[in-house]
Image (tube, rainbow, N blue to C red; front, side):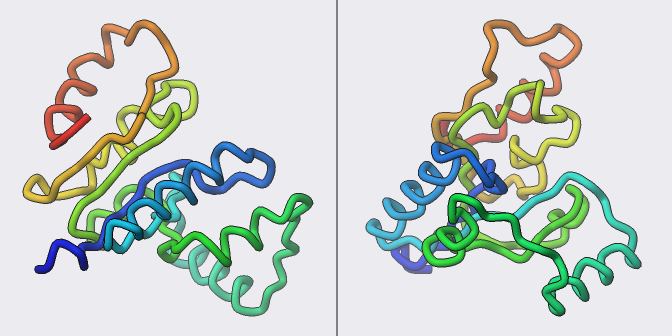
Length: 165
């Protein structure tokens, strides 16, 4: 595959309705990757597992547009216009079955923070990505000085799979 046509999956915070930094870093990363000839796509991820009934209810509501969109600062409109994204994935298991990209980037921000991320879930550590696919950390942070002893081995295992940090 031509280097210029590679798809890049981005795992980052992307559901904000009021955080300028979150949406602008996502836009900036996609912008730079596009300038380099790559095809970035942000993964829409929610760590809540849905039953098949809940999933189809969500799909139906999306199609019928019955969900009222609260967008006081225009973030939804900005994302729709400027940020390419996947369909929504609910729960880490839904990602293991998919291959969205030729390489993956996680970050920026405190994606590895224990206060917002379940370490055992592994999404922001790209646990759903096969070993042979490159994984890159882009300015990812733990948001703390120390990692709890009971999480060090799990985190070490996840980080050892990265091509670049």
